[in-house]
Length: 291
Image (cartoon, one colour):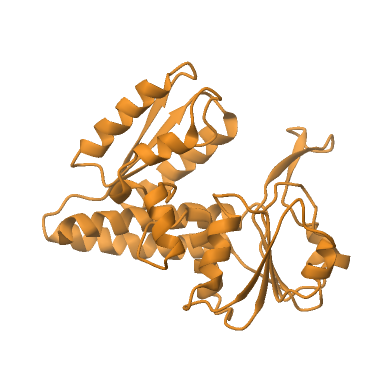
């Protein structure tokens, strides 16, 4: 079994992006700028956005976080988005999920200018993805593809089972895996899938993205499979100083004994999500200077 180390790949990507930023600086060009919009005080969102800011700085990007109270109205948030859309110094920005219940996430994502939509959630970018056109791809699916690429894991002709059909991970990932540059045969499973185990036991690659801790167990995985764990949950654990431990959607100790490759939690796909967000920001930056 070999770990697919997201920390290692993130470090490689930061180094690559840093070199690009330095090359632009030699031409007298400003660094790329990434902005995160945070509405409310969700703890996980705050931690995630702070990590994005830290890693942006490591690349030499400029970045900032715009924080708003949970009482912010949808109209007010759209007004803030319009300001960012029109700010020529901002290359890309994200609106962190989850949003307060009185705000429609999709309306917010569709208010973001498609050429600054580095999270890839705008409907136009989603449509381009389904057509195999160049677009901004959601960061987690893009990070998974990048991880497979950098570890030289072949997808062509392989049977990939994706568990979970969210707009953020499962569905866009199933599209990416089926496109001609990946050429996988994809089975997309979800809460209504019957006999799930029959599908996973046939899979060469399993991507677990359903948000249920330790859902995928050893008896569901064939020998030598590749397992990508997207989930991350807090589980109460009195033996830990903070009272909890982090767990993915895969029962790691069991499954790792059977598979050829597996991602850890933490240290796997979460870091690759950040890496892809940074790559998308550089892509938006390059497009601006090329135009």
